[in-house]
Every structure is written in structure tokens, then in C-alpha cells.
Length: 306
Length: 304
Image (cartoon, chains in turn yellow, green):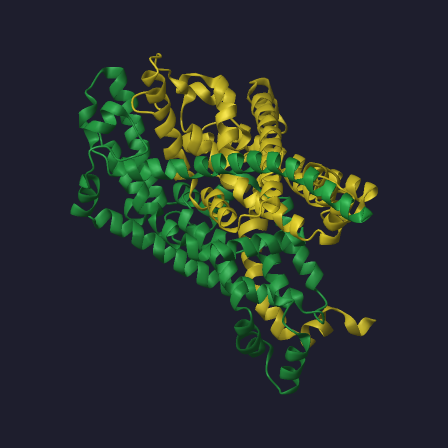
């Protein structure tokens, strides 16, 4: 047993250690070392003193964050957006996958699948352009349609209430192709005999989908939900930032933890408060994913993530 | 006889529900596909429309008063666009090649059954997806301690180790027969040589798949550029485009407040033409590379 310690192993597989060293070092420096910066949440950060030289101030930062109301607002927004996006984007992807798997027209399937996958490939910057093209007051498509029917122009950028839906639609739009591929893969692996047996028993297409397809892709659905639940406190920064931009009027309805944190970085203000926000985001996310995974392990070990 | 009647009645039942299902399905999928492609059509049409037409009628599906004026403006003084293109191509090429090599080598090591620490090292990488320092700590750390401000490394390094790609690559590596590696070892080949000369050539489709994912990530990145790049000449394409759009939106907002005429602002069609120029290569390559992405996602989903 002693013989198989680290030194023995290192001598035996020296070359392998050297081969994995660059990425281990890279991840150590780029991902692990910055974790030490989380202590900022308990400090009064001053750039000249650096992360480790700044003074400790206990839980002050957290107190400010939640007393100002910002903490609750961004937490609520982040969770609600994630739930809304989770349900709509996964739901749409499942529907699309089920339909595409059932259809028989080869060319139709191929073309539509390609087209639906296309939004995944463009950057959020371009999506931001689309959003602006559609909703801007002067030349937007929406106002064009409204005026064409004789209506009054609307300024969507001053209507916070509709933005959760706009964001949810664009999120589903961008990911539907990608996610449906995952579900199509799951459906393809279902044993064809199940469907043949159902045919003989006289099941119609809706019954087959309901009694065979859905139960068969349940593990995939659960895994996808789990992955998303683990990120429930993380906002998709690129999406929110490109769609909403710096429209102050919309912040109450659209600010998530990540955009709030970024703005303070931009303006160099409230560093302590935002450090507190990221600390509690990182830690809570970690706890949530561990708890959820543990529960799943108990209930249905096969579905666990690790 | 009896079975024949049963089958026939099944078929009738089948077809009627089939027809309903097919009508709903074709309509639904066609509408969705149209929604996915429409913004692109409007983008391209807008870039070929005259400025007055856009201002007067707004954006539309077909070009209005067809003109290539906007592209003319871009390519009359192309230095800025070309430089941004250069930066993006440089970042994409270097990042993808370097990243692909390091990532594949890592995937190879952690897939070696005789390497005792493979699970520990895998977890070392996986852990970063569960827990991280967050935006603020990472930003401060990169700027203050790694001095990455305005350094191209800030655009390249963050994209190299993606745990999801690592897992996909590992399942590609797992398809290489162990016997091949064993026999090369007996022949006296060193580990690195085995990896480069025997394993890598067998991973062509894996390399293509992950390489394309990485290239797409680098091509579309604007976030790292926004955080870390100061000098305008070092801006990649997407960030340059973003800056341009921001300027226009900000100016438009101010103009509408103070009542300045909108004519003096950077034009709408120019903006759209820039977006087309920035996205063009992706759309061009898309039909040929799409299948690799489908493959990668499928493998990734099987891994869970």
C-alpha cells in the first residue's frame, strides 16, 4: 500500500503529470485563486490597499445590501426570471423535439431543424440589435405594425411590465434549437419496439407520445431541470445586458444579481455591497446544488449529477 | 380474417389522429422556423435599404429602395473594421488551437485508466462549475494580480478550459482502443509521443466538434473585451459592433430629449450592415459545420 503513494505514482506516470500540468495550473490561477477574492464581502475595499490589505468590516456590506432593498429585489428577479425561463425554454424544446421526431418529411425536418438551431450561433450583441430593431420608438417594427393598423405608437422602453415576457421569449428563441437537440437524442434512443407494440394495440399518435415518449425522456428532463436549478441564482449576464442595456427605467423589472454587480464595477461604486452580493450568490448556489443533488440521490440515484 | 379487420380499423383510427397531429405540427414548426429566421431577414434587408426609407417606414422584411450605400461607407474606410476582424481572427485562431491542444491532452490524461489521480483531477476541474469567485473577485484578481488589463491573454485564457467540452472530449478519447496505447508503450514510445502521434490522429471528429464550439465562443465574445480591453485598436469585432450600437442608442436618446434632428446620427442601415459583416462568416459556415454541433450536444447530453 505504501508503495502506491504519490511519489511512486509520480515516478511511474511522470509524463502524464506533465501533460496535465498546464491546464491544472491555468485553472488554479484563473478560477481557484480568484475565489480568495470572496473575502471582499467582509471588507471595506480600497483599490490602493488591494484585496488583502483592505480593512475588515464584518457583516456591514450585507446589512447595506439588504437594507437598501437592492438585495431582495435582485434576488427575487433572478429567481423569478430563472423559473420563467426554465419552464418556457425547456417546455418549448420538449414540444419541438417530440414533434420533429414524429414527423416523416425528411427535407422539411432538415430545413426547419437547421433554421431553429440558427439563433444559438449568433452573439447576444446581434440579438440586442434585433430587440432594438423591433421595439424602438422611432423605427421599430412593432410601432410600424401598430401605426399601419391606425394605432398609437408605444414606447416599450418605458413599460417595465412587458420586459419579463420579452426576455423570456428571446431566451426561449435562442435556446430552443440547442435544447431540442438534447431531447431529440433522448427520443431517438427509445426502443422502436415500444412504438410497434403500441401500434399493434391500436394506440394513436397522441397516446404514444403521452405513454411512451414522455416517460422515456423523463431522466433527460430531470437532468436538465437539475442543471438549471443549480443556476437559479445566476442571471445570464450577456442576455440581460444586451436586451435591456442601460435603460434605468427598466432596472426594477429586469435587474438580476449579475447586472447589478456589473454596474457597480462600471461605476466603481458600492464595491462592498456588490462583493457581498456575489459572495452570497456563489455560496447559496453551491449549497442549493449540493442539497438538490443529495435529495435526488436519495430518491432516484440514477438521476443525480455526481 | 379476424386480424385483418383489427389492423384495418387500427389504420383508420391512426390516420384520423395522424392528420390532426400533422396539421398542428407542420403549422407550429413552420411558424417557429419563420420566427427564427425573420430577424435575420430583416437585418439583411435593412442593411440594403436606404436610410430615408428606414427612417420613414421603419424596418421591413424586404429591402426598401435597394442600395449598397451602407456597405460602401464601411468599406470606404475599412481600417477599423479590418482591424477588428484581425483581432477576432487572431483571438479565435490562437485560442482555439491552444485550447484544443491543452484540453485534448487533459482529456487524454483523465481518461487513462492506469492513472491513479484521474478522478481527483477531473473533480478539480468539475468543481469550478459548482463554485466560483464571481464577477467582482475575478475581475479584481485579473486586473490587480495578473495584470491582464488591455492584454489579449484576457480574451484567450478564460475560454481555454471549459469543463463541458472537457467531458465531451473525454468520451471521444474513450473510443480510442487501449490496446493501441499499450502496444505503442511496449514499442518504447513516450507518453507525449503516443498522445501526439497515435491518439490525436484518431480524434479528428472530436477535434472538429470541440474546435468549432471553441471557435464560436471566441468569435462571439464581447464580454471579456468589455471588461478587460481599453484600447480601441484592440477591440474584437463583436465588441466594436456593440460600441457602435451603444453610441447610436445613447445619441438617439439625447437627441430626442434636446430635440436635435436625427439626420446627424450614425445611420441605421450602417449599423445593420456592420451586424451583417460581423455575423457573415458564421452564417456562411453554418450549413457545413452544423452537424458537428449537433453531434457535440448529443454526446454531451448522454454524459448528463
